Length: 60
Image (cartoon, rainbow, N blue to C red; front, side, top):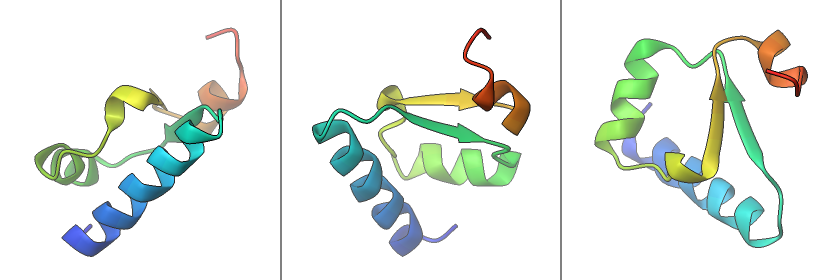
């Protein structure tokens, strides 16, 4: 993930948050997560699950 991709993802997360959509990310590789953290993506507004199955199941 480069800074341009991170910026686009950040804008998408912020836009979805503004219209009331809860964002969930799943299957984030460690290197991508580290880069996203370094680039200060707004993960405080995102639910993160390790698998797609967990993301789909709202009981977890």
